[in-house]
Image 1 (cartoon, one colour):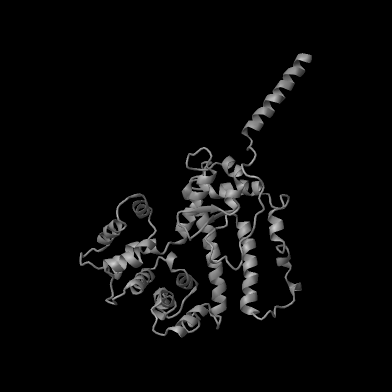
Image 2 (spheres, one colour):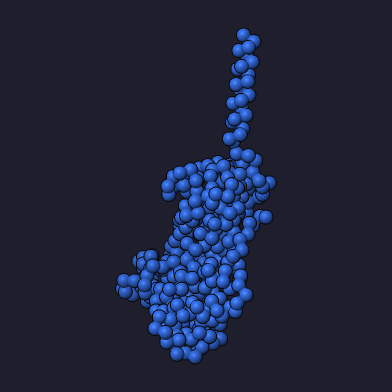
Length: 361
């Protein structure tokens, strides 16, 4: 009997040891208080919310600020008694930092199978995390487009005419100071931009076309891509001959092209920075006339105006580099659980395309 008790005890000990060995170890980072993005800076920042719950809270906060700014600009907002759905998010940062209400580990466990879909093999790859990021940011962008459409669609017919759309206030200020300006910014609100976004040519923008109008870098429309190329020529064409010579390309445009191969060549070699510029210029100049036309510039438009996919991949690669403890280029559930704050506080800053920062480091 005693022998059986000893065997039972040893079995329980072995089971507990095995259970602990497979359980996630304590997170690598101490607890950090998560902070929501500022509603006023949400449009400009390139951080993509990893968790749809966080994204929903941020959208609610931003919508509230947007309503105050556009519908009650003089502080004449109505009484707050009719906002029960908002009351749950008045102390949103307390909510997401309360483990009983928002458990980060539980959230990662629930989200993991939704990200691991291509294929569902128990690992999250860079492509899978990129696609997840892209889906989150596309929802956010479309939400803002719908909100802007509500603001500008004065007759509420679901379409926007050029007369209905009012450019941002800075356009009017700039034009007031310089009526003959060819500023790069002013061109983005002219009628040819509107017409290029009007894919079906009916003189109005539906929701999809209006989204392209506001975010042309993410378009698949040949008309709008052609317009982007035309704008680049207009902005950089100093001698106004309708095309770019090498100096116009090199001085005003080459440094803006986001390509890893060009970055490595211009930052790691001892050769003149003109060398890679001349090489790319030659590749783009198909007719070898020494100039770049609108059509010849189109191949690098995506590098000049990165899409949301670009930023989604940059953030995915950064997150994996931070959380991939076994360095196999992908993430398992244990790695994600042990590095939760990498997912909930990763920031990609546009000021330095090759620098990535953890906001709470």
